[in-house]
Picture 1 (cartoon, each protein chain N blue to C red):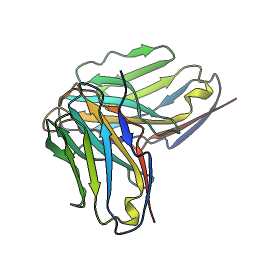
Picture 2: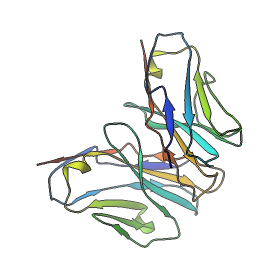
Picture 3: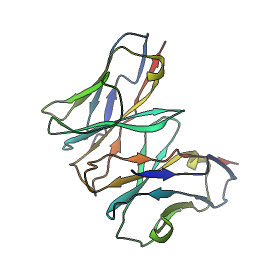
Length: 114
Length: 116
């Protein structure tokens, strides 16, 4: 079974631009979560989607948004990029939402904002 | 609020040594899940183990073992006879059952370097 895939793997943008990252979950998984990883703040939860609905959201500004499609694929968008948005963005999928569900992560998208 | 502390920022060992990575967590929830993930230089987080708050049995998987102690809120990870391929950043994470969905709260990670 194929794992979680994320595209693109690397991205360079300039301040003020916007960016869209894509995540395809493991086949059959309906929950997708996004995390931001930076050297200063570590791994931080962005948001979670299940059945095309946002179920949970972390403490990030409104510039960060996401959505999920009927095939469970998810996208996240960052508008008006800032230098501090440079990070590794990780997507994780699981079968459903709830306690014993294990999340499996993709390889991430490395975003550099200049 | 939930919190996970990994006090060891970096550990260096020589191959074949045993090494223990510490993890201390905080939560007021009585039902929760603890995880360990490995992050090699490629960046992908690799799932290692999940443990729920009602199961304090230690677990061994090959050279890996985990010690969960609710009394001290710790979930430590030991690698026996370490190998160079074990070099990576290891993260401990916590997930609560009530209202948390699938949100994981991560520790800051421990960089393990295994040298020949």
